Image (cartoon, rainbow, N blue to C red; front, side):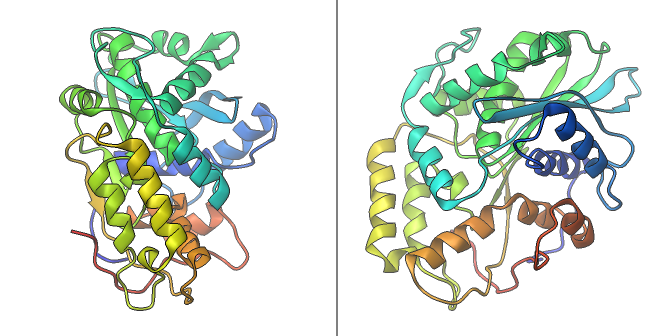
Amino acid sequence: MAKTRKFPLDARVAVSLSAASYLVPGKSPAQQRTVMNEALRIAGLPTGDDWTLVWGPETVAENLSFIARGPRLPSGGRRYAYAVRGTILEPKNLLEDLLDSLGLEPLPWGGPNGDAQISEGSRIGWEHLTAATDGGANALEYLRGVEPRSELMVTGHSLGGMLAAVMALYFHDELGSQLKVRPITFAGPTAGDRRFADVSAEILGGAGRFHNCLDIVPMAYERADLESIRDLYPAAVAPKCGDHVACRGLVDLMVDIAGDRYFQPPGGTRLEARVYNEGGGSFKDFLEEALGQHRANHYMWLLGIPLQAIRELTPEVPPWSPPTIPCECPS
C-alpha cells in the first residue's frame, strides 16, 4: 500500500458492499442475494454479521441495485445502505459507457434543486434504478417504511458511483425529513454540471467521494482532469497514454465532447496508489493498467481491507495482488 492510512468504518463497509454488487451477474435475484449475503460475512470484511440484504438485488437494463440493513443506532433507527453496481469491467464496456453518458439534462424528479443538470447517462440510469421493484415496492417506497431516525449510505463503484451520487440527492429530496442521507462513492465520474456539483457538496458533503489518483474513470468528464490522462502513467516502467496516437485521440475526443460543462463536487478523498509491473508500452498495456487501477478490489485494498478477505470475495487464478511500483500522483 502506498501509504498507511486509517479510513472510517463507514467507508470500508461501503466499499465492501460496492464490491459485492458485482458478484454472480446474470443469476436470479434470489441466487444473487444468497451469494452476496454469504460474501458480506467473509472474515476480515467490516460487514460481518451486521449487514444483510433486505431489498433486491434487482436489475433493470444492466443497472443492478440493492438495499442492505446494518446495525441499530443509539437513536433507535437502523443503518441502511443503497448500493448500485457499476460497469462489468472490460475495456470495450468501460469506454462505451464513458462516451455514452454525456449530454446534460435537468434533474428528472424536479424538486428544490431543479436547476441542476445531470448527464444523459445519469438520467437514464436513474430511470432504470427507480423502475426496479422487489415485492411490489421500489427502493424509495421501501425506504419510506424503515425505522424513524435511520441513516442511509448511498454507495457504488465506477458508473455505480456516478449513479449513487444522483440517487443520494434524489433520496435526500424525497426522504430528507425522515432519513439522514450520505453518499460514499468510489471511482465515479462526475454526474453533472457545476450546479449539480455545488448542490451535492452543499447538501450532502463531498468527503465521501473516494478516488484513486491514478484511476482515469474519476477524471471524466471535467476538462482539466481529462487532459491530465495524457501524462499517465509517470512511473518509469508503466505504459504511457501520451506515447500513443489512439490514446491521445480518445482523450481529445472526450475533451471536445465534454467541453467545460462537467464538474466533480469539491472536496473528496484522494487515494494514492502504485502501478502494476506489467511491462510493455502499447495502448493495450495502458488500458490494462487503467483497468487495474479502477478495479473494486484495488479500492478495497486502498481503504485497508485485508488482502485475504479481498481474495476470498473476488477469487481469481492467479490470486489478485495489489500493485507495487511507486508512482507519483498527478498534481
